[in-house]
Length: 272
Image 1: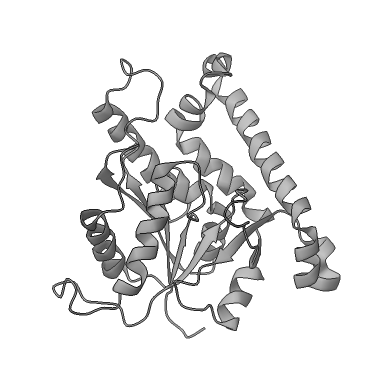
Image 2: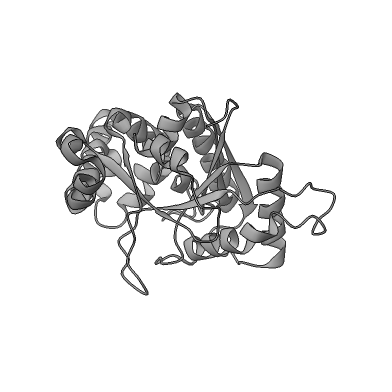
């Protein structure tokens, strides 16, 4: 690719989505000299079980700090919009906010989740990215914010939802050397991974020493990525041929038809 700094933007619904869902690829691109940016479209203000411990304002502030810390692990910046958690709409106001944000950053690559998802905030985030994609290039829409000349490449991180259609593993990214980085990002989100996500079935873990919690979380990510490697073994073998056995943990991504088609050069950069 031409000699300039490329930019990647990972867009999630909540603080912790954009990093832990694509942390290996983000760390890999940062190591290759890319500028890394992450954004949460909501402020994460209701992701907890105890409203007395965390008011919405306190939790939003906590999760904003946690996201910023995770962004530093990835060598990038992690912004958090102020849309309320659990109440995100794919409306005109939210679309304008996202269009302006993307235009001002002007990424070459956007990573986000698919429309298929259990959580309305996740679905609406994907819808906002989809609705924004073409409009990023329309100069007379918000003319005070310079339009992009080309849509970015847009890819989706992995999910296991089957309806209306299953995830397509178009891109296979070896990320074994960045596994520890993914775990470090997750550990930044203490209010999420060491508290809220333990409710209601694993509340005993809340009182564990932090080192033991980190060990448990590391095992969780290892299990998830090991299963993913096994699930897509045939895809790995088709892409990497005789070198497939050398490919350890992977992240897989689906190419969105709403962005630019990735070039052969970009595909090679992502997969090698």
